[in-house]
Length: 253
Image 1: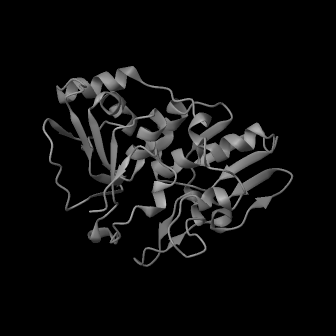
Image 2: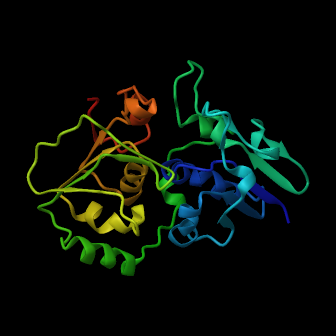
């Protein structure tokens, strides 16, 4: 049995965006099974993106480590390799190392380009499975029913509990605002009823925008991943306009 090994530890938006790559390895018969190391919080993807041949797992060797407080990602063994490696037993794809285009600008599409795969149509590779019990638990906790009167807002980005930041400068001028907050028990997928039902969804470009795209939500406004406290100084959204829904609005504030 030949195994595919995906090096894209996070974040969740990157994983959703790149899922077609893993699906393609199986579909084209290049491997028999794909293993994909992720943070413990994302092991739930084995439920939500259920595919018996694509397995999300824990692996300490794949977790990026901080070296001497400098923020340099140092990964162990095979996960430090930046080139595709293929043997009789496995095919290794270092997606996490491919984020810059020829102009040295951030470009998620490079994760597809370097292996010659088209990112268009990636949503159809995912058979999203919902957890109604968890969705109802969140609704009961908030005490707010999903409604077309609501404007849903997400200003958070990161992978809690290890990393979480918030855009510092955005104010949304709308009525009936519901802000998404990180709770102790929730997954991004638990917010699906609110995303589907709300009048409009404002979100920084993060996993929530990839989920909204997967759900086919059209009334979406994307805001930049801007937080100087974490080194995110850019307000440009040029890198993502090409792969999101063309009906969406993009505000670079």
